[in-house]
Structures are given as structure tokens and as C-alpha cells.
Image 1 (cartoon, rainbow, N blue to C red):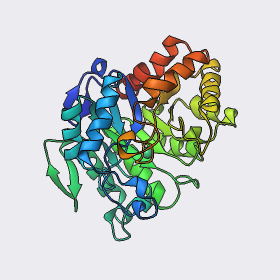
Image 2: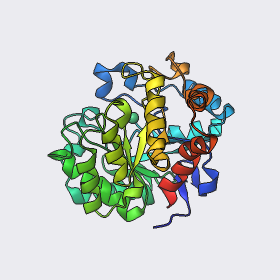
Image 3: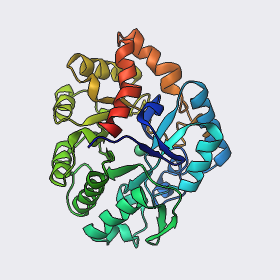
Image 4: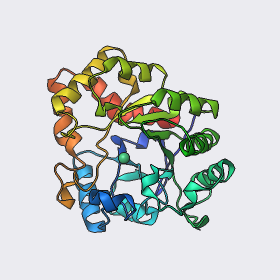
Length: 315
Ligand SMILES: [Zn+2]
């Protein structure tokens, strides 16, 4: 399906208005059970988030895809205010995250596949921010579906959730972002999505670059036709920028430059305005130059931060 519009929290835009885009970010996240053990997963100060986005904009950033799905810390009304205040276009996620983000009595554990798919589709087409299964902001809509699989892959409850998310993405024609644990079981997850009617060109596998040694595995994922979102840039607990550059350069050399996307997957630990180490603008201010020094051409840089994001949504 060819889409001609992309849904942001401030309305529809044309693909050519997307501009420089980081495909997997978090900019404002309310408290969830996951933040109890990792406080960096809650960052909900509007002023600080606006500052972060303003810096991103002034360095050339135009769009972010917010990967915090509904009912897992997302506040879509705040996202709309952040977008208006900063000029950065924000695409919000429906779908679901790892189950650690939800209380044990949350409906995400119990709703059946039909109910889940229906809710995700309503968030994309009718109005977002459902609470207790009720639509409360009909003027705002999500523009993408988020899913997550644990290292074990799409098994048990996660199979039902992934099938629902994939069905919603297939019916509406929007992209599906899949959180993975270092890319583990990405290929079975892609198979599940295909069974639910998705085109592989609309699927984005996130976090595969948390392992940057097994390059053949990266190629195997790319070979399925999905996009790989490389979002472990300057996450030094995994590896340094040099190794990230080597991975990207390898994949471009192997012919997969048209399957790569770049982002930071930020939390409070990384956002400068929250006291974090880098800032949402790190790729723009620093990492793109490192890639250039590494020999990545301007055309390939443009591909990863602008053309590929546009294609994920529209081709
Ligand atoms: Zn994330």
C-alpha cells in the first residue's frame, strides 16, 4: 500500500515534510512499574523535554518517532504540546511494550486478540489515549504501532500481542516498530507479522545493534526485507561509537544501506536537559561526522536519516 500521509500528534504531514528523522526515541514518559527498578524510565518534565527538542530542532532535527506506546507511560496530549512548542514533528505509538511496563492487573495481560487489534486500530484511526478502554482524546491519533518481544521471541502472551499489533499495522498500513533483546528471535517475529498480513517493508527491528559482533546475523535480518533501527549509538555499556561505525559501514558495504535507520532510544540517563550524558541531538552534532570520517558517504547518511524513514511510512 502506498501512503500519502503520515500522522503526527499535530495532524497529518506529507512524506516530504518528514525531514531529518530519528525512528525510535522517548521524550516524555510518565511513571510506570518499570521505573520502580529503573528510575531513568520516567522523565515527565515538560520544560526539560521542550528544551531537548528545541536543541534537536536547532541542529537540524525535524521529526521523532516516539516509541512509548499508550498506557505504558505515553501522554499524547503532552506530546502535542511539546511538538507545538519546539517545532519538532512527533509521531506517537499505539501498541504495547514489554509487560514490565504494566501493573499486574492491567488489561494488556487479559484482552483477547480481537479486542487488542480493535483498540490499536481505533488509536490510529479514531482517537488516541485510551484509558480503561475508553477513547478520551478524539482529536489526537497515533501514527505508528509499537510491539516488543523478549529474548525468547514471540511466544505465550507475546505471540498474541505481536499478532494483534501486526494486524493493526497491516489493516491501517502504518509501520510496526519491534523492540527486541539484541535482535534475538527477530526473524520468527517477522514471520508472525507476515502471517498477519504485514509487508516486511513496514517492519522496523529495534536494538539489534546492541550486539555488533555477529555481522552475519544482522545481514540475515536485513535480508528478510525489514528495516533495522540502529539505536545503540553511544550506549557505552554495549560498545563505543567506533564499533557502531564499523557495523554501519559493514552493512552499507554489504548492500543494506537502504535498510538502516538511526536513533538513540533515549531515557533520562541520556537526555541532556534531564542531566543525562548526551542529548537528543547527539547524532546530528557528533555521530554523523564520525560516520563521515569513517568513510560513509553523504548520500548514505541522507538515506539513513531521511529517505529510509520516509519509505518506511510510505512505500
Ligand atoms: Zn525504546
